[in-house]
Length: 339
Image (cartoon, rainbow, N blue to C red; front, side, top):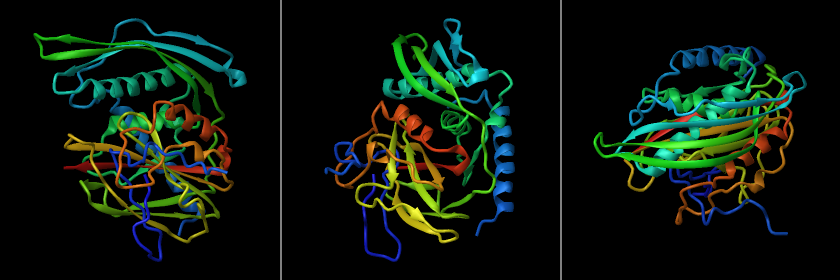
């Protein structure tokens, strides 16, 4: 998903957004001027931003009718007082019009059941606002609230998916209404994590543009208020996760205090689609986090695959769990790419 474009003072990279640019989902494994006050302001803005998201919880994408539960959610809860593990089963379906592909329906249903699983697993006194340890940047006119909330919840440090399994899935067509429903029975194990936010750390993320045309280039800048390590992930439309930076071509991801990290990327839409939404997930940690080499990543702009792999979601959750939440800070940026 990353390719060097030219020799410039800053490393130039190309990112295929919505069409993950990778060669055979190549692994990254090798063979052998912010202030503390701004950081606190970031935390406050995050709380405000996601308070607004909670008020819009009933908003779905245009292609989905209101989801309905086809069976009650079954929940088995361990001792949360000891940061226990929760096993959750979700049995539900979403209704789509016949213009939506089964692949899209599956991806949106999977995102929905994951969100429901996390909501069911967390204690009743934990709200979305109380989980906020990060915030979105570059909220443009096309900002999709439901996608934003789903990605935020799934990446929250207050709850980690340890495992997941689709027990049953089946689309059912209704020819009379020109629609179909996608049924899914899903099981996940969620581990409750301590709620930690260290307002001493902050990163300032800037995008030259977040509404892109297919093939259009844009720049991303990241500035931290401490020395540390930068990781950038790409949350794809199919709910998979790919590595943007670092990668096997550019493994050095150390950045210095107040020295802007600037890269150039290119937006590319999914074949046959007029519009794609993708989320860039920025993680800054004062300590290196091992395991990024296990993620798929682009090493060529000539060949494309469409996914980071179904196991990449759990891989990301486990990777994030390796780090100390008091020594990291996260930001998210939603991008829209149009034909």
